[in-house]
Amino acid sequence: MEKRSFFKRVINAGGSNRTGQIHRGVSTKILGALACSFLFVAVVSAQKKDKISRYETFIYASDRISELIQDEYNKKLDPVDTLELDGAISGFGIAMLNAGKGIAGGYVTSIIDIGVNMIAGLITQNANNKIKWEEIVKAENSYQEKLSTVEPVNNFYSYPSLDGPMDPAGMNFNGIGCLRTIDGDTVFYVSCHIDKSKINRIIDHSKFELSLDTLIIDPYQCNLPNSNFDTEFSFDKRSNLQIIIEMRLISSWINEMTQLQNNQELGSFVISVPVNKDELGAQRKLRYVRTYDKPAKYKIAGESFIVPRSFMGLRDARNNYKKSWGTGDYRIEILLTETCGITDAYRKNWRTDWTQRKRADEDENFVQRSWTTLTSQRWDQISKQWVVTMLKAPADMITTDLLKELDLAP
Image (cartoon, rainbow, N blue to C red; front, side, top):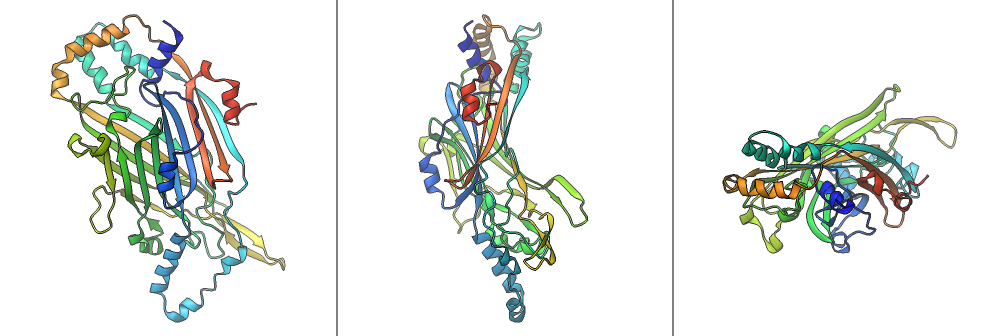
């Protein structure tokens, strides 16, 4: 068996045990349509069925959020009280803290891929063929991809505060988005922003919610079936396709008593989208754009606390000690899950499918393969955004040039 064919079979297998290559640049059509600024972009390149698959995660930033919070405050205050809000924090004069930071970090890890081998190995076991076929196909009906920052983003707020750890003044976090493209074509896109109709929850409870603005799903380019066979998703064979997007906000901070709170989950958001063939539109894709005069078709479950600021003492120009709190340090994790079932017609035709699988596997051995994950994170000063790149590949495919490209070369 030549090396390339084996490599193709392994990378097309389950989970995130896949590889690819890094492509610079972001789809100008998608980014040009986004009417907001991007603070962070996480990129995962992986190869699926001989095509380059690219994941990009966005954390949106907007000064408008702070203005909306202040407006909501003013509605609750008497006119006299409003005049007393002199904005002492404006004396900091601090802009975005990420600028010019350069390379933030990166790492290399290795794993042993045995999951795919265990599934495929069922073909050679002595058991009822129908039972084995059912186990294999069910194992192909689930896929997960996890996207996350390498290091924390350190400015949930634009500037520090003199008023307390939960002071929302200067809040610029405005939502999360995720884009997946294959050969430049959008196959998955979700964009969520802070629900502006519920800004009062930030004031009353220090919590915020997200609303879904845009959704694009190409079911025929999803990661199912999660198989080492080069097979496109088919509604004739697979049923009940479901795309689940989970987003988690995680933070660490220290309070005035020097008590450390490390990696605390502040909240999570979940979108569950059933994908039906009869709802697909142009180019066989599911498309949804929220219109504000109609109820949302897909709701986001969950909420999150705003990020607590870490305590930090400071001295002013006259050497007077003052209490202050920082700009909010946090991480984002996104878990994309795809699931489906088996149609009755596919199950009825199991013998034909089983025979095809046997023929494809009879000349190949499934062995453990060592995989390496490369991850790097940097601040892009020109585009004003974080770029996190993650690449997973067989260890023997990692080259010095690739390490240099990711700024991980020794």
